[in-house]
Image (cartoon, rainbow, N blue to C red):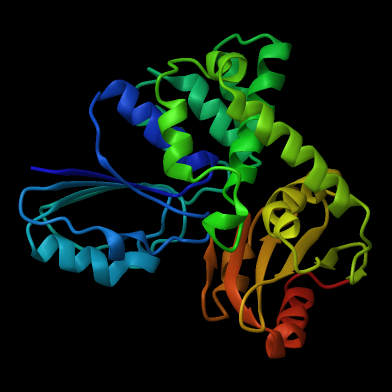
Amino acid sequence: MTHYDVFNGDADGLCALQQYRLAHPGHGMLVTGVKRDIALLERTPAGRDDHVLALDISVAANRAALERLLERGAKVEWFDHHLPGPLPQHPYFTAHIDTSPAVCTSLLMNHHLHGSHAEWAVVAAFGDNLGNSARQLADQLELPQDHQTALQTLGECLNYNAYGESVADLWFHPADLFKRLHPYTRPLDFIYADSAFTTLQAGFANDLAMAEALSPLEENEHAAVWLLPDSAWSRRANGPFGNRLANRFPQRAHAILTPTAEDTLSVSVRAPLSHPFGAAQLCQQFVHGGGREGAAGITRLPAAEIERFVRAFNARWPA
């Protein structure tokens, strides 16, 4: 029997797997990639009696591959918070899915493991821009403020590392980053002991500073659209920049467009934090779009559809 750990390469996927593997020691075959590489089951060659753990990727984006794995006799356990679409009814499929805006995959894992490694869930919630949920759990753990601040910085840095058109844009391949995280039971130990944190923190600060120097393509009281330049730093920064804007302007929706390959753009959408709904429904109007209520995206938006997207975005959050 082979174990496959299939996870989104962002903070939420990393920290969900970290919790699981601390609670269930072992080494699964790691299947992951950049944040937007979510059709990961296509690369998972599991067969009869193999175990597949799927973390922070949507069932909707993997439905056909999931059905093939189940037909081959693989046992699949799924933790996620994205809109799943219809779930397969199969004895080998177990789902832990909650699409509530205040929940992320690592918080679901924390609940499943009865809080055995809860600090990693705090890191993930901060990384997923769920500050209220992160602070609520941190307060339950009675973590002092400086401890919470450190976990927030780590969460933001882990999340930042996953953004890019390809792994070449990233500071660390997410599988390698997980291997560096895994020896540490507590997040603070990783922060103090591993130079990867220093690398990510410096890169995050530099890339976000360049994004902050830009002006929006258009903005009003309720919505803003940003077009970033075609560069590796902008592909790394687009998601974290959207989170920063969402926190700065909680009454406003934000869309961050970044050029990618073949005359397309990636799109990151943040619903207003004051009412974190509608991002996934908007993005699902477009091919390669999906996500969750508060934050969603489009992997490849043809440049010819920019105007259509902006119209749909402004219609969802009108001035």
